[in-house]
Length: 291
Image 1 (cartoon, helix red, strand yellow):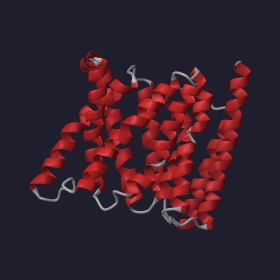
Image 2 (image 1 turned 120 degrees about the horizontal axis):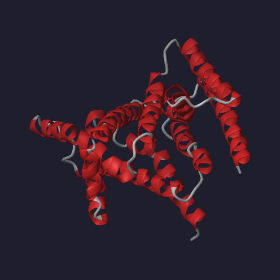
Image 3 (image 1 turned 135 degrees about the vertical axis):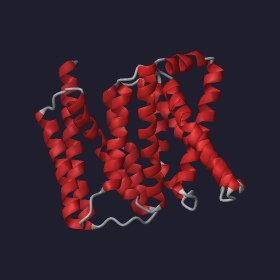
C-alpha cells in the first residue's frame, strides 16, 4: 500500500467513526450524559495508556507534565473538549442530531475566524464571504425559530477553540490526549464512585458496560487514525474529508433517527453549505497558487 492510500485509509477510518457517532451515542440515550462522559474519559485514558506502554513513550507525558506552560494549555484544552463531548452526548440523547451536525459543519469557518482574531491571520475575500454567509444562516435560524442554535454554536466554538490551543501546543496527538484525559480522570473516577455509592450506576448491565467501554475506544481510535493520516495526506485533502463526518451525522439524524428537517432549518443549512462551497473553492485556489 503506497503512502497516499495508507493516508486515505487512516483518514476514512477516522471520519467514518466520527460520522457514526450519532448512531452510536443514540444507543446510550437512556444513560445520563454526564455518566457517559465519565466513561468516555476513563476508557480513553485506559486505551491511550496501553498504547503509550506498548510504544514505551511515557517519557513524553512526563516531560509535558513538567512543562508548566504546556500543562496549562492542555488543562484548558481538556476542559474545552470535555464541554464539547458532553454537549454532543446530550444533544444526541435529546434527538438533536441535526443541530449537532450543524456545529461541525460551521466548525471550519469558526476555526478560520478564531485564527484571524487570535493568530492575526488575514481573511481572503472569499473566506470573509463564507463567514458572513454562515452568520446569515445562523441569524436566519434565530429569527425564524426565535431561539439561538446554542448546541451548534457551543460545539463549533468549543472545538474551534480547542483546535486553536492545540495548534499552539508543541505535543503529539497521543501525548496530548493522555495528558487531557489524565487531567479529567479524577473528576470522571470520582463521579463514577459516587454513582456506585448511590446505586445509580449503569455500568452493571453487560450491554451497558460494553457500550460505555466502546465510547472510550471510539473516542481515542479516530484521533489516533487522524494523526496518522496527517502524516501521509495534504491538509487540503484532509480539509475536504472533514465534511464526511457531519454529513453522515446529518443523514443519520434525518433518515434513521427521525430528527425533523423543517423548511426553515433547511434554508439555514443552505446558507451554511453555500459558505462551505465558497470556502472550499477558495482553499483549492490558494493551494494551487502555492504549488
